[in-house]
Each structure stands twice: as C-alpha cells, then as structure tokens.
Length: 474
Ligand code: ADP
Image (cartoon, rainbow, N blue to C red; front, side, top):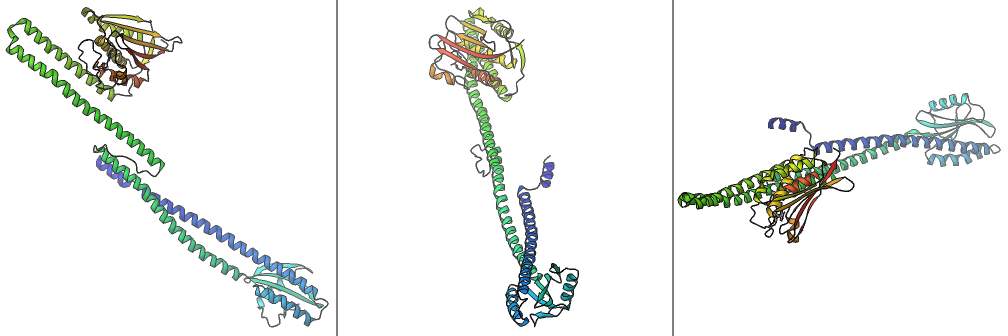
C-alpha cells in the first residue's frame, strides 16, 4: 500500500514546478503575441507614412513645376533646386526628367537605368495630369507628367524603403531586448510566487504531521492566500475536535479509574468482613452483603453510562430516523419503572393518545430513561414523579415533561448540569449513586436531533425537565 502511494507520488507534479512552468509558458506566449502585433502594426504604419510623404511631396512638386511655366529654364531650375534640396534633407529624392529619360534637375544626379525604365513603363499608360504611386526597386515612388517651361517633362519623387526597413529592424532589436527583460522579470516573479505558495503548503503539511503525532499546541496560521487560510481554519477546527476527543478519553479514564476505586475497595472490605467477622451472624452478614450488592450495582451503572457516552459520541450524527407512536413508546418506558411502585414510588401520567414523531427511537429511549431515572432519584419524600406529553395548540410539537418534587437545582448550577461528570452537591433528597453522565447523554442526543429541551427548577418545589418533539402525521 505504502509502495503504491509512493509510486503515485512519483507520478504527481509539484505545485511549484507546475506553477512555474505554466507561468513561464504564459509569459512567452504573451510576449510573442505582443512582438508579432507590434511588428505588423509598426511596419505597416511606417510604410503607410512613406507612401503619404511621397504623395504629398509629389503633389507639392507638381504645383511647383506648374508655377514655373512662364519662367526661363535657368530660373526654374534654380527655384526648383531649393525645393528638391529641402525634400532631400527629409530623405525624399526628387528628379525632373525629359521625355526621353534624361535627368535635367538636379543636373549632377545619377538615377539608375532600372528606375528610369520602371517610371517610363508606369507612365506609359497614364493620361495627362494623372499621378501614379508604386513600389519597386526598394523605393516608394510618385510619378507624373509635367510641363516645365513649355518642355514635356516627367517628375519622379521617391523614398527609399530601406529607411523604413532599418527603422523596423531597430525596433525589432529593442523589442527583443524588452521581451527578454520582461521574460526574465516574469521568471523571477513566478519563481518567488510559487515559492511563497509552496512555503504555505509545506508549513501546513509539516504542522499537520506534528498534530498527527499528538502535539495539540500547533496552530495553522501561515496562510497568505484565501484558500490556504480556509484549509488552515479547517485544520485548526480538526485540531480542536481531536483535542476534545483526546481530553475526553483522558477524562473518562481518570474519572472511571477514580469511580471504580471506591466501590471496589468497599466490595473488598465488606467481602473480607463477611469472610472473617459476620459470616456466622445472618443479620450482619446480610447487611454487609447488601453493601456489596449496592456497590456492584453502582459499578454496573457506571460502566453502562461510560459505554453509552462513548457510543453516543462515536455515532454522533448517525441517526436512524423513523416515525413512531411516541405515546405508546413512552408508556413502554414508564412500564419498565413499574417495579419501583413496590418501593413506594408513584408515577402520575397525563399523556395525549397517538402522538407521532420522527426520531431515532433507540436514542430517544435513552433520553426518556435518563430523565425518569433522575426524577426517581431526586424526587421528594412523596416519591412521586409527574409525566406529561401534550401537543401545542397548532399541533406542530408535543412537549414531554418529567417533574419531580425534590429539592430543586440551585439557579447558578442550572447551566452546568448538562456537562459531563457534573454533579450538584445540593440536590439530593437521599443518597444518590450517580455518575454525572446521564444529562450529558441527554444533551448530546437531543442536540443531534435539533430538538429543544430544558429544565425549570425551583428550590424546595422540584424540577421539571422537558423535551419538545416535532409531531408527524401517523
Ligand atoms: P447523575 O448520575 O449524578 O444523576 P446526571 O447527569 O443525570 O448525573 O445529572 C447531573 C446532576 O444534575 C446531578 O448530579 C444532579 O445534581 C442534577 N440533577 C439531575 N436531575 C435532577 C433532578 N431531577 N432534580 C434535581 N437535580 C437533578
């Protein structure tokens, strides 16, 4: 089994590694996406800009050439050279060519054969005054026919695309640099984040191991995240519950050992007395044997109560609910106390017929039995116990009341009587051999059922213990 678990563990991925890996993958994908989008947007914007600049410069040059119509060629050349130089400083080449393809302005310029042929072929099909833009030979170009001082000329305005390419390459370089830095930062952040998360998980796991070894002083607190904080809260709750259960076991052990000691000592002492002293004296012997019987009964009661508490605690939440006739059920339990009538006890019963409830009948029997036993034990000199079961006006609930005529319970002790091993010092009409567990059993069972219960008690008058049962149709 252990080996199987270890094999499974080997196949599992660490949260740390998974988080780190996914975060890195996500970062790379985002950076790639940003890079591609940036590249497309920047290169298309720059090339659009080059087109626009060439077009606007071309239009301006057409206007400039047309304005020289009335001027001599020398003056025109001088005037146009100014504009051409201005555009050249801006990275745009401007040429004015004769119809045959010879460059006349600027005079000293060299224009490749290929570009001249390109322009001629583009302008071939174009009509008078038509302006053409095109991309070829690594240039964005603008061409148009123009009339310079009566001469039929051609205008060529070009912007080299390598400037655009250079800018895009430079940007790509910076983009890569920024991406690398961003990736590095993402790696660092994801590393520290995954470390922080696993630190919390490791702490929780180590603390849980300490708890499993019985250290109840541990506290699950080191949580930086909501989910971890919830796990910590749950584990703190588990710790408290386990501690309670362990304390309970210790308490039971201590109490039971203590409670067993007294009757056992008594039994041994009286048995020795019967053996050595009173064996031949029937009166004394019977008295001593009665003490032994009483103490043995007390031991049986104690053991039974401890067993019931353990059982109730173990099966807490496991209710075997069913609908049953509460009235008949109550009569059945009261009948079990019938033997007490010989000892002078009387039970005054006032019960509505055929009231049905839905509950775990076995556990409810324990509740009623404990309440009746207490009433018998603590009732007054008249040895009377009053039992009633009455439905409320709207028929939704029935209240079971068990009343005695004993000394009552002091007000300040009322909240404690439901606690384990609590025994009042001042409510006993006659010596009562209790264990202090009966009402605790009642409390646990009724709380599991979510039934209301309580006690009204008046000093010198008596106590009434009550339970409200929800009523069900038969
Ligand atoms: P015990 O075995 O001592 O009766 P319980 O849990 O049944 O244990 O009751 C706890 C304490 O509550 C008792 O010791 C007693 O002091 C008080 N008590 C319970 N029932 C009555 C009652 N009907 N009248 C007076 N006191 C009562």
